Amino acid sequence: MARKTYRIAVIPGDGTGPEVVREALKALQAVMDREDFRAELVEYDLGGSRYLRTGEVLPASVLDELRTVHAILLGAIGHPEVKPGILEKGLLLELRFQLDQYINLRPVILYPGVDTPLKNKGPEDINFVVVRENTEGLYTGSGGFLRKGTPYEVAVQESINTRSGVERCVRFAFEYCRKRNQRKKLTLCGKTNVLTFAFDLWDRVFHETAREYPDIRTDYAHVDATCMWMVKNPEWFDVIVTDNMFGDIITDLGAMIQGGMGIAAGGNLNPQGVSMFEPIGGSAPKYTGRNIINPLAAVGALQMLLEHLGEGSAAQRVEGAVRKVVARDLKSLSAGEMGYTTQEVGDLVADHIAKS
Image (cartoon, rainbow, N blue to C red; front, top):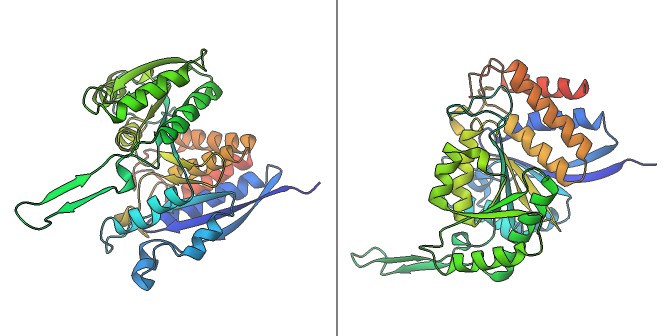
């Protein structure tokens, strides 16, 4: 019987993106050699360099092609010569909106051998997941200026929350918490005491949906309290569900407590369509071409991609290799301090996969 084939779009992007994607693809090849599937890779030249060269951010023809793939692996987007907002809105947010990637999934896991800035906390304490609504809230771009550039200027940015958008995110979080099957506890992170309209909707949908999941314990925390408890008592959390803005903030805090951007990966999910996976550290232009950036977050993004495609055994092999590399090989997760080059870290991951 023919092996299953997945069509995967690869967007290396800007800065160190191509460097870390190259190492993630080494891991993909190594795991394909051990598992019964294959991947057909299609590379797309998207990002700051293309924009500076052509003026294009996301051509309609490319978007149409991306709708047909099984998944997308993204390196990084961000170029120092491109004005902030152009690539973020025109490429990253546009992909999320057009492909309806309404869930941002961010595991916050401290692997053995990785240092955390939290005193007296270890891997047994830091193991939770943030489910962030990914297509609504303040990121819709709703709002505008009045009398711009004058002393009487008014700027309005509106948070748009629909019941259908909130409900599908909340329901995904309950299902994910059940599937994760660890503490089976789901925390709603919001700000019901101030944002009394948006989070009244979130709160009502959360508790109405909870009736369908009697096996899941629920609780609530204001976003400021969530930040405090993530630092003081991260072991309290299992799965957190929240809106777009708060999710953006607390996941960066999560990256720091799990060891830094060098290990943090995330997924932009459309559970019924095309999803995109990426390291969350950005393009890191100051490290471009120096062969010192940590590629493990990109490898982690690949692991999430494989899990999403249903290749659970392959995903476990990749994660197992990452765990071995950080526990046995690396001196640090920081760029230039790992004790190995970017390419050597990729080789270590691939070697561990080959031996798994």
